[in-house]
Image (cartoon, rainbow, N blue to C red):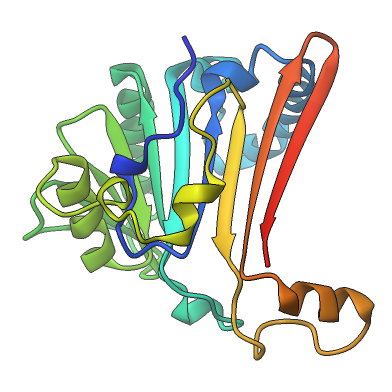
Length: 226
């Protein structure tokens, strides 16, 4: 069954969010094409000792949600968090990959202690976490991971309770889109400086997008607040 976007899984101060319903996407024409493309790429990863079964992995994923509370042209300053909901089998696959990596690349993959869940540092630049719940968390910031975990457990206010957020009006409440995204527009220091498209974007305060499939047609809905 499909899994609609749930604002209760996103931080209350989020300024952008992207949600992909993998359960619905893999049944669409576009999803089948993407899976085919991933299967073609998979053999390229075998040299690393990791031989992914693309179809098996995708079958274990329910939804993927990413969100963040800032914008920056400097990747080091981005604070995004990735939340992957899936079956218990997904956790087994991910933990198996991490366990193998800690043996083959012990200087790059290290276990982190002191967090309320099992977690590993990846190349010292990001952290992947495995809470007891059927979810995988990923972020550059350990503090963001802890916050995401508290949000999922209902211990911290989420976007669902922040009715003042402009993102509320941009996220669909019905239908079965396989992708929804919404963002508040960044400041002028991030926006392109020249051209008519730049002037149009600077008039927009927030934007939302929903993609779905109706029969043989892929549908798109774009909502701009200006």
